[in-house]
Length: 450
Image (cartoon, rainbow, N blue to C red; front, side, top):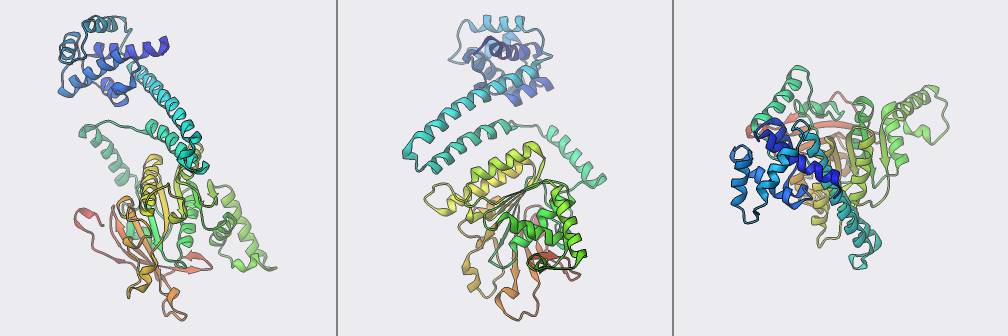
């Protein structure tokens, strides 16, 4: 550790001694940023731990109180009192204590990063850890943990401080109409009103094939990119990016997709296509169609995009096409993926949309309408997701359906109501229809439905 780093650590302890009042705002900020392991100097780490004990009891941090508390610890040495007196005397001021604390924290993260890089290198070169792709995946997990640690806010907060943040949020909601994210499907947004989809939510859409998962994803992608003007990261493991792009163009321009496969003379249709393409070109919508990607790839790409644009939506199509980490059971591997995607939503303060294939067994039931428990290879989804939506289209099971509408079944909603709304699909896209009848379930106790 160089002299500048040691000086920052010393000034943190010296600044706390000058403040004495450990309940003050500057002192509380220091305690929220640091912990004993943040200090490279073991004697300063010990002094900080003593300060934490005093702060927890509501005591002040004058030299005599700190000395008395330190004597109760078997690590105490006779030179400790002289050392803290020196720190208090040499610290220029407590005014810059927050800057000193941030400097100490950054150096602690740097030390951890170097250790993690060495660990990652060891994992990559150790062939007993699997093939090269498995080894790279393990190394990426280690490196991602560095970013997770750096992003952590950590620390306990008093309810008074939490209440201040909550009150500001309520003011925004009531007076300014600021609420959660809409999804761009009017009937569904009405059902989810007033909370809608809060930032930090994992939204899961589950269905059997040909029910319209991709159509719903396209509708939500376009809504976020064009109406909400949010940055969007879409990971398509099933459909090539050009096919997704074509569906987006059809959805926005409302043209018959047949014009892309035969010569057409309708200048008005092509004008609408050109206009739609221009809108998407000006948006912050990004699509990755890399097949069989690992979780680490999704996390890395989403975080990199977030550095350039504030991400509003991350979409993954679909769960069981992702390559799970090596695990004895698929459900455990996919469970780790859903948990990590939920954490990503919280980290980026965005919505993560996850499409998932459902078990074939549900088709043998008299009532084929999906439930969260029908999710293939994972039961973790029910624990991790905030909103679970199933899609059901009777027309997929009969050649002559009387009602070919698609049912959107909100089966689980941690923030509000459950129920069913209806949508219509044409040419692989969702279109608005006047008959979007809403059948709402009664909310459970405390306004939460599971």
